Amino acid sequence: MRKSAFTLLELIFVIVIIGILSKFGIELLFQAYKNFIFSSVNNTLHSNSAAAVETIASRLQYRIKDSVIAREDDGDIFALSGYTDDNAMILEWTGSDIDGFRGDSLPLWSGIIDINLSSATTLVSPETNTTELNTLIDALSNGGSGIDDAAIYFVGSDSDIETGYGWNGAIATQNFALHPINAGTNINEFVTGITGVDFNGTNIYEQYQLAWTAYAVVHTPADGNLTLYYDYQPWKGESYNNGQHVVLMENVDTFRFRAVGSIVKIQVCVKTDLMGDYSLCKEKTIF
Image 1 (cartoon, rainbow, N blue to C red):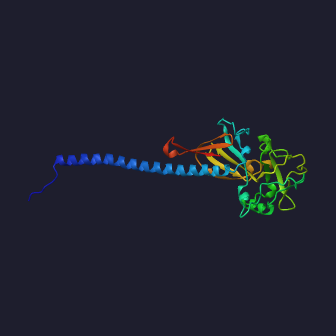
Image 2: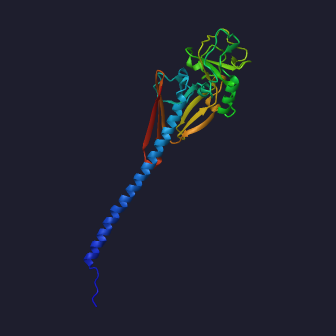
Image 3: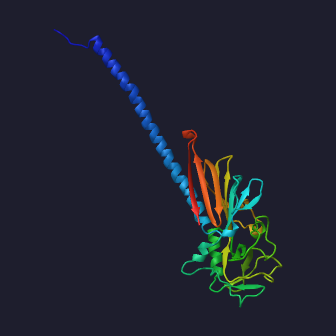
């Protein structure tokens, strides 16, 4: 019987073809895997950085616009408008209580002071409900704050930014931008929140904003964390370290912010060790 088999030349051709397929096949598989990893990491960075920027922006949009500061590591503070250095790792501001202003069916604080009914000891705010406002603040702060920790800001008033909002220590008089208040006897009344100091000699305006917390976004290059601090009152002498906090994002490479007038622009850049020096940035402008 005659048996057929591969000749030596045919075997050599088969071996060469298998070798070529193996080389390029492995490279194709490796490239496909690399593209998958890049796409996965890139999508994760996109979503995480976008979420961090949106979280900051959602709070910044309800800021008391004159209160925003840049704070450097050595503790020096600067009004954000006009600040051009890149040394500040902390963005800090006082937030207007938008949740209380929206209320359930009606605002819990009206934003109006009746000057004719007010006095040196009591400010009357028609349609304000300090009892329900206290309940809301207690819930939002998880029991950490209440109406007696709040302050009001008269729209149109002016003050030195370092002292007017408590960034350099507790406010001791009622002649600055923020006015610490407590709930009065009636639910539509505010009284002074500073012991022994009333509103005598204070410029009272009809329109006000109410605040019960300041906010700070802190970037720590040592661990790459970007952290949001809240539920603290600088006008009572507290710093952001006294507040509650949540880590917005890890592996943050840079956190930058600028202001032109009352407009604030923030930028968050993140990196990953999986792709060398690759970094992705997200930015947003808040009016």
